[in-house]
Length: 291
Image (cartoon, rainbow, N blue to C red; front, side):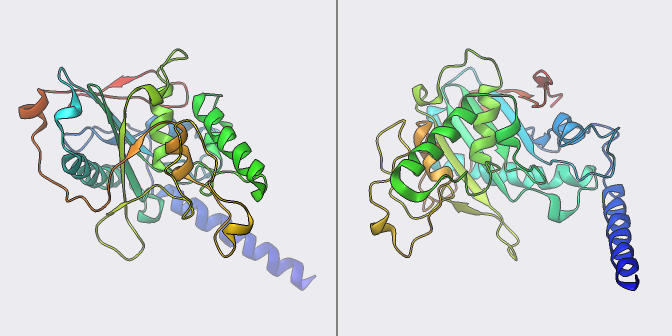
């Protein structure tokens, strides 16, 4: 009986602590972005996932940040180094925006991704408190790609495993933004898209440039393939996991070299003043930014 009471008390304390933590966050108002790239909280996701905030206010909210920029000129004039700097700046904007909502540092996503092609730039963070959002979100081409990678991985003899980070990485989220614009969106593989990610590692004060997550498997594979080049026997002492290293290949995106130096840029001088908006997930239409 004493053990039961102690267990109950522990549960009660944990519940109360969770309520207090969530109380520190305030999602009653959607705030304006804090920087020129327009990176801001996906408000619809925050108040809708995993449950409607009005029904489950104590549930930890899914947190992700994003922005969408369109130009009159092609982004091919942006160097890889400048795209890296955009990713760094977008990460800083995310941190600034998170403070407007009282989001605790542990709930701020660690990664920010930039996806660039034609006359567009998409920015998306990884997601926190998302569960398996990528697998439960209304079926899109992203889910189909994740399923393809999982199937190919299983065919190689490594078992049926989902994305190592449950599809919560920025590379997956940024593709989700693109495909969420409509059912008839052309495959990203047709866009010659460049992609880059920065990640804030534990204990660091600034993010570092990083390759897509995953094991050290060969990613120099044919487009639209997730298949590894070696057998299960050859993978001994390696992690039998797959991640965004497979996803970006399947989507035909080209990861930038993490060894590149981030370079300064002036978007308006290079490409003209951008049209900045946010593609909100969870059923909300594209939302224009006032910036």
